[in-house]
Image (cartoon, rainbow, N blue to C red; front, side, top):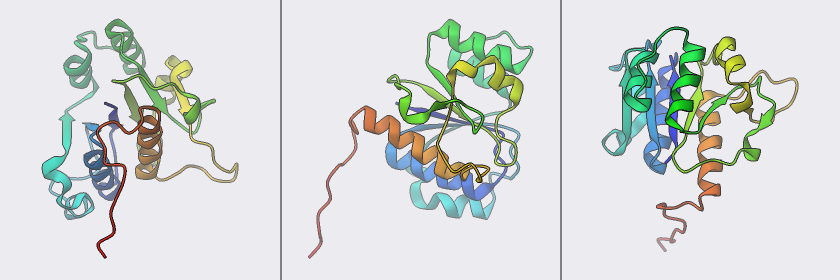
Length: 179
């Protein structure tokens, strides 16, 4: 399954919406703190609706804890180099979503169990991290005049591209009218 990684998200409504999208699709959500909000925030809870019970949300106090728990990596040091060393050693596809990417999201061939990093709403992912991992950095196409898409919308676009490529395995694909 796809693993969505939020690096220090700032807006509770976005994270709540992402919780709901991940719950509805079976994606795992990894949140690397610090966050710009409290986990008790009413907007976070409201945006996630009643999907909290079926969501798989994993929180980490920092990037080092995330890398250790998911890639068995204990290196530490510069985040940009640590991330690349961790996923390379583990042999796990790891991708980075950024307006600075040169690959289009739909040109990525997603592997079954991949990780996709998304950055803060106001700054995106740090440039040193992107530079160290540029061959794995992609963008969602948009007009040149637009700075970026909303974070929760970007996550949804990427999750559904992953699901399209994996033929929506495990998801209900047809509905029924009630009348």
